[in-house]
Every structure is written in structure tokens, then in C-alpha cells.
Length: 284
Image (cartoon, rainbow, N blue to C red; front, side, top):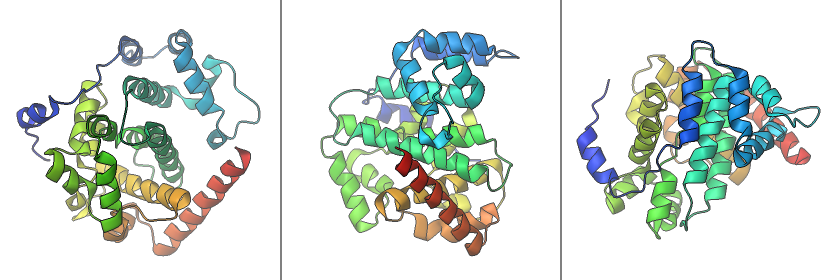
């Protein structure tokens, strides 16, 4: 367990424009809270919003899902992706739409990377341990860095902070704290809680740069999920920018231990992911 000084965090976060949860998301969560969520109601809700419908269809028809034909009906998309994944995608799409304005980084690139990490989480989750639901992994992949747009929208020099972190190998969290007295993990935690993501996912967002999380191998759901995230981040960084994620070298052996992977196992996993990504790139 860990302690969260909610009042202290709230005082810092109050100067940021944390987006208000939209009514459409509340309607979606009301449906999902039912003992047996109605797929028809979910499809109707998404179909009533042109932007949301277009975003969901764009995702289901992306090369990641390898559809043999174009999916044009929302209900069919919901049935293929599953309610939990659709819920995560709806939340991410609405969050993306709510974070608009002049930012010091490309928000489009940020959300593209988040989606790639989420899909990498699914890829890994389907190949290694089955102790964590893949829809939970997908949600973590989408939202783990959701505090970054808040910093980019508020601070004109935030891109320079990220560049410095990348060039020096320094943890961006430390540089954010030094310059802004907060960091994207804290901001992401507040976004996730205010948008009522599951509590366990909110906690992982808050701790996703805490290297001490792997000091003792416990094999808990949270530890497995976070280890999967670290691999997913590194795979995406390798395949898209031919570099390592900032904390990979420090955490590689611990992450592999958590997931019960040998170096050979990981190399095979990495090769498989690169092959899939190459096929996707050829299809785009």
C-alpha cells in the first residue's frame, strides 16, 4: 500500500485545467455499471456522436485489428472489440477531444503513441501471463501518460523539458518536479480519478515511474500490469524511434523477472512485435 496526500496534490493540481468529465461518458458508465450492459445501448450512445463514431470506426479498421473487410457499423465494432475495450476507447476519445488548445508538443503524436502503447499492451498480454485482464492492460496503455497534455498546454517550455530528459537520460518526473512542482504522474492520477477510471488503474498511473515498485517481486496484478507497461513503452520506442525508453536499462531485468521471461523469451517477443508492426506499416 502507499499513502496519497490528496489535499496536497489537489492544491498543486488546482492551477491546471483538468477537463470535466463529459455527460456522454457518464451515460456510458451508467450503462457499464449495469449487471448485464446492453450492447445496443452502447452502440446507440456512440452512434449519436458523429466524432465518437468516426474515431471508433477508425480504430477498428486500423491495421492493428487485421479486419478482412471494412467495419462500418458501430454495433459490429462494439461486438468485435468487447464492451470493456470500447469503454476505454470512448473514454480516451472524449479525453482527447477535451484537451484542446495551443500546446508545446504535438498532441496528435502524443495520442498516437498512447494508442500504440495500448495495442502493444494487448500484444504482450496475449502472449505472456494471463493474470491481468487484457482490457485493463489496454486502458493502462491509453491513460498512463494522460497528465502530459496538461503540462504541454500550460507550459510553453515543456517540450524543452522532455528534450532535456531524453538527451540526459534523466527521469522526466524529476525535471517536471524541479520546474513545475508537480509531474505528469500526479496530474494523470487526478484526471483518471476525476473521470472515474477504476481505482487500481488510477494507482498504477500515479506510480508508473516509481522504480521501487519492482524492488520485491510479488507477482501482484498491479506489478504484472506495470511490468507489461514498461515492456510496451520500450517496444514502441524501439520500433518508432529506434531508441530505448528512458528507464528501460534500469528496469529490464526486474521487469522480465516479474513476467517470468528469460532474455531469449523477451528477444522472441520483441522480434514478433517488430514483425507485426512492420506488417501494419506496410498496410497503412
